[in-house]
Figure: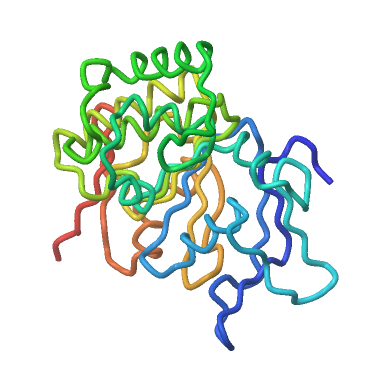
Length: 265
């Protein structure tokens, strides 16, 4: 058991019928790393996130299977969620009722979708919520209904919600989906600010434009397996990305913004 690990997996598979969605995955990510999990749609990234968040469990494939989070193989879900901040597109869709950005952030203290009468909101929670909202530069929107915000505005409030409990790790699943160019740039800057002063980031995406300079570990998924794993210089390259996506591409990086361009013959 590695107590320094956030994720420790060995020979982990997830089966759906006779098909392996994840196939004998072995991976160790330290609590000190910002990591990006990159792969095409259907490569197993979403299933991997469900394992991390204990939404699903590995299929039994033998005694040598290991799946630990923060050094533990069994977790109380509420305790696990106090260590993890999670932002997904599905979460944004769940906030469909008339809740303000401020209330959404407060709900993070209770891991709930909204606030309910049995929730006791303390002054300390209110202060922390306001501090986090201010850090993400959306204080002027805190009394606006979440469902009336732009996707980029709502995403920043959901990140503030995820950070409310000072988690060790912030997990972002396809974070820039549905964002326009301007919102994506603002979101990119928000991630850089978090990486410099808050939780470690696990970024799950198929878009290299989501990658920030602070990401120092790259895990590529393809067809349910780990295709490549390593540091920026070794893995996050035009050659590896071309192999991963099956298209001849060139990776460019300008002022911390990454892009992929298809090479012309």
